[in-house]
Image (cartoon, rainbow, N blue to C red; front, side, top):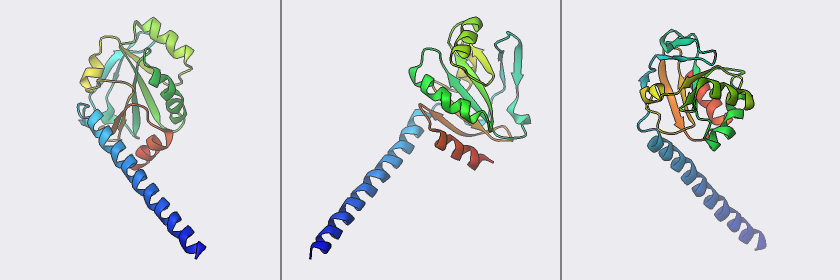
Length: 172
């Protein structure tokens, strides 16, 4: 008889855990949909802005040969500081472009990029023009763009490396 009671408790615990896990996953999915509701979808807008050497750069994602990751961050964002390590790691396997959203002058952004040891190219969006074109209203925001220049996924808030790797895998 003791085994039967123990089995029943284990099954109740397993069912409860499953329900909570399902609520967590569905809640996260719905939360991401709500937070990214204003972000651009479809064709990725062309990006024109100064890089950290103050050279004007034009990036058209329609002529890409592989998926790319577009990472909007800000110097003043504490969550972005936690996200940087994940993005630096992803930069080893996918082309990453950082957009510093309203983070000061190009010199200030260059200093921040150096201090944070960011290992991907960064464009300074001092006026917020690029951020507005993508509908970014908060950071960090990440866009995964497929090899046809279409926005395949977008997120806002902290994203795990596993979550971003899986989205990139689904994009290929």
